[in-house]
Length: 199
Image (cartoon, rainbow, N blue to C red; front, top):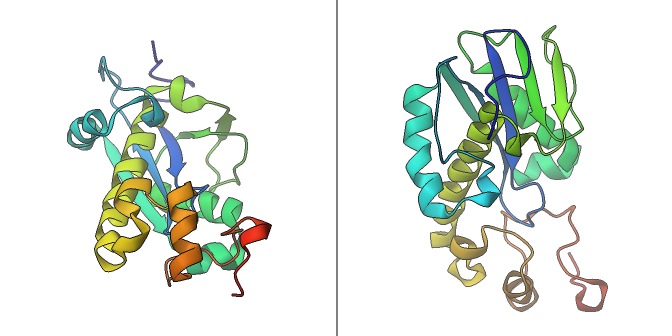
């Protein structure tokens, strides 16, 4: 059973990201403040849910949250500032969109940088422990998936509609065959050494 709040603050936001390990596309984060009376029996870490359940939960979270924000940090910036900094920046940009502003922030994982003067706590596997982080994980994942589905239309040979930019065997084979696109993260190891591309 996921808990609603970690702190005694009423305006506690959960934040999480999606797409950190991908070879293409943005890293996407979301931040969510849920009301005190929020209940949902199927909401949990987005990785535990089917695409259908995530798509079902997205409008519920958006309708019932006191506030939510979603932010993409694109591949050019990921290559410039690295994926960890890009993930944290995406979280900051999502929290920035919240109105009312949160009094406390809970973060999925073990890395974060202070945002304004708001107290925060990092929680490993937080998306399986707290409803607001789980809700943020659903929004981050669904918004990112929608974006990957759109750019799939432009470059269908990489099958981003299915692999969402993750380093599947099929995705790596397509990189080997067709080369890299403007959506690929050039700072990532796109192919194992034995299949190296000249970038």
